[in-house]
Amino acid sequence: MLGYIIWNINPVAFSLFGLEIRWYGILFAVAFLLGWWILARMLKREGQNTEMADVLLWYVAVAVIIGARLGHCLFYEPQWYLSHPLDILKIRDGGLASHGAAIGILIALWLVSRKYKTSIWYWLDRVVIPVALSGFFIRMGNLMNSEIYGHVTSLPWGFVFVRDAETLPKHPTQIYEALCYLLLFAALLFHFWKKKGHVRNGQLFGWFLVGCFGARFLIEFLKEVQVGWEAGLRLDMGQILSLPFILGGIAILIASHQGLLDKKA
Image (cartoon, rainbow, N blue to C red; front, side, top):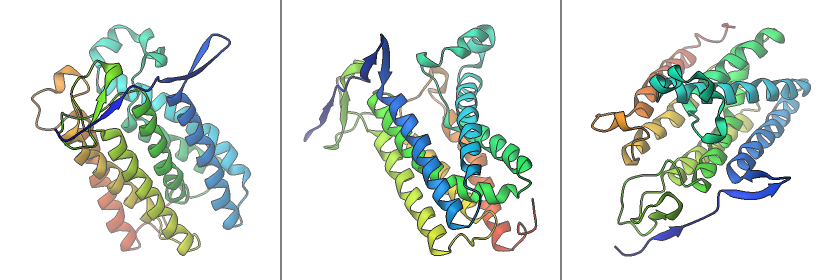
């Protein structure tokens, strides 16, 4: 091996009144606040009521936490959590799934669209921009937790995750995903600003689904299995759950290009 990086960062940033404040939680909060600010700027640019961004923040925050937690419990370890339902509440013990968060966000946007009597496509095409940026911060939070990393690698940027008792360098797949989401955010935001918000219904949402979950699908090939039963499978649970989102994104892009979504609520 030519070289590697020793990663031994303490996941706890500091303690406050005896409560551990973790880097993951800080980055999670930054993702929400920055996402709210970006969405408010986007609404202002379009002459919309920016108070809608405040309401959406709370809807999405609750939906992401509930959706991500239930997604992990039901997709990855259903037998345990169905037998020990109170353990679902132990979020601090770990276990959040991005696919569950995505479903939660969709429900939140549907509720907001009903509240303000607006097209759900309007919200979908705008919210995915800050959501892509949030993906960057959340994956960096996973890096600070020394979790969700990849297989052994001889590449010079391999990370030895000391806190997880690893002795060999592994692919820092958290960084791979984070950079993909950051590039996706930049591309979506550039397109929105270039078009001054005048985008076809479903266009940005479709590209987000393909880009986000396509990257997730490919990077999963480098990851270690998250739960034991995934070992030996051709595709792991993350890839299986990503496929419907990718196919849905392709279908939405086709429908958007043909103008089939322009009059859909």
